Figure (cartoon, rainbow, N blue to C red):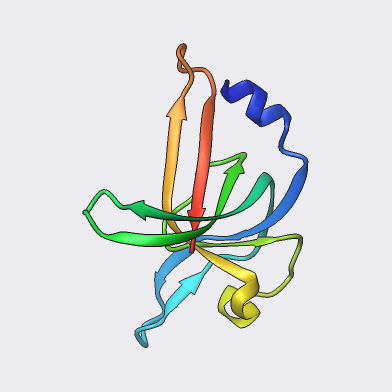
Length: 113
């Protein structure tokens, strides 16, 4: 199934990974990177591994591993700080990576709030 998903990532998103604190208490972000994706706007309550519940606004299949706390934006952007995009950029609250039965490819899903 993972190969099928990877072949059908026909949309483009911009991804910013977190790079840690900037020294003043705010998070820093990597340079924006264009990624292949399949974006689905989907409101759904998620129970996180720590037991908290959070409303997810988008489920995004992606072509690479991502970090929780990073941001995704549907389309391309050169903005260096995703927070400046307001409600257009979504924070990754949970990232799931499941290998296929042979461990050769992965289904990678970012759940965004």
